[in-house]
Each structure stands twice: as structure tokens, then as C-alpha cells.
Image (cartoon, rainbow, N blue to C red; front, side, top):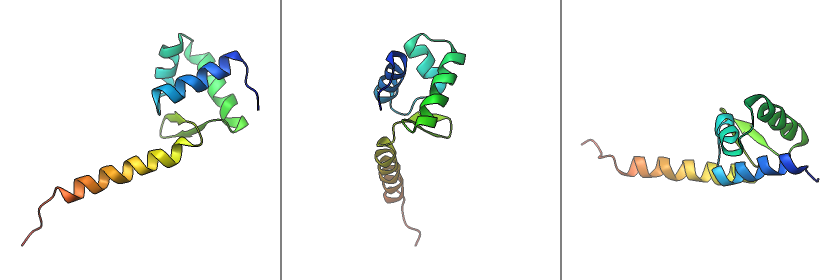
Length: 84
């Protein structure tokens, strides 16, 4: 699946920014929000991009993101004192 120049730049920006919002992508690339919205929807339809809770990420990044969230929850639980 080959991507054009702008699509490739969007994918690279998402990889670099790690789970960015649409506005962050727009600012990083200096492209209008409308055009970024069009590109992101296009890449989602092609299956090159995933979206969740306002953030965009590459398909392989989802597993890493879930792992990071699980580690954070474990750390919070271990820091609490047990009631006696």
C-alpha cells in the first residue's frame, strides 16, 4: 500500500507525536484542519490509521498503548496502603 507525499508525512507525524490529536497533527505539518481531517479519514478508510477517543495512531501502536496503560494502573494500585 503506497501512500502519496502528504499521506506519508501525516503517517510520519503520527508516529513521531505518539497518539496525537487532529490539532497537533495540523500544527506539526502546517496544514489546515480541514485538509488534515480529509487525510485522516482517507487513511482510516484504507486501514493505515486507527482512531480512539480523539487520538490517532498506527495499527501496531495499539498493543503498545494498552501495555503502557496496564503498567500505569499497576503502579497506582501498588502505591496504596491496605486498610486494616
